[in-house]
Image 1 (spheres, rainbow, N blue to C red):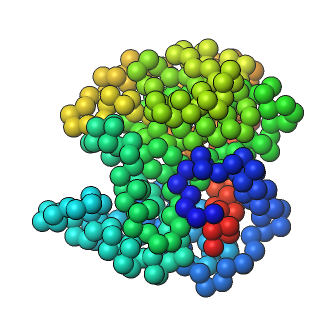
Image 2: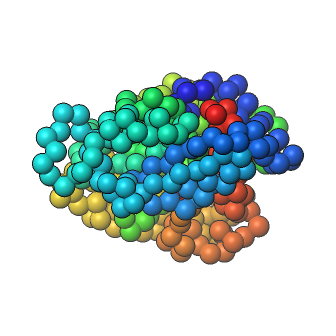
Length: 330
Ligand code: CP
């Protein structure tokens, strides 16, 4: 494996191999197989689980993790090719990554959310991730970008396959949009959508009108899933009889760009919350969320703390799946 920018470039057999490895690490412990190696993590946005899981996984493998906060602990980084750097950016990514970090670490993780100040067509090109991948001479791991969150996707698949038995087409995973006070990236929803379809489950995607996911990714999803994919615009309908409810908020494409008014698009949908009544409609569906989550906005306390919540397991699996990815890359 070289770069891990999304799960789309891996076959299901390669994903299953990573999940098997993660399961083995869960059973036998993570081996100190890479003593002395260095893993970099460059964070343009905050993180709790991704950062700590990468750090714990790296150290468990016997290697060292170097976490960097772009523009705070490091110089501010320019990513635009050909930029005349007479503004507020101090160092170009080509120099930071290409001329230094590539020679210092064995692989480099990057977190760079969608820049919602850019029009959606530009933001969806993942300009920061692309610039890092182009500059790097070592493998690059996407730690969540505008379009994908592969490290979350692997942990989610590990949890789901541990719980759902039998024919995968007998199980519907409902990926449900939720109200949130701020617009968020689409990366987790894209990754879950494509990942669960690729793994063979039925997926029901529920979101209000106007909150469509990326059109190119939706086309991939339709190609992958065929009749296993259903899209609805009503939350009760979305969760009904589902084995799993995976809640996630994301910003509408129309909310990207300078001066966009996302709040007026979201405000009418405050009732898109997973509460006990909705979970009961799913008979009852297990609840999943990648965290962080706004309690009693996205999900009610009784659901996230209830017996059918897989949220803690999802978060803890991040360490095992991160270790599996790093073991293969290192
Ligand atoms: N789910 C996830 O990626 O969590 P963090 O944003 O805390 O890393």
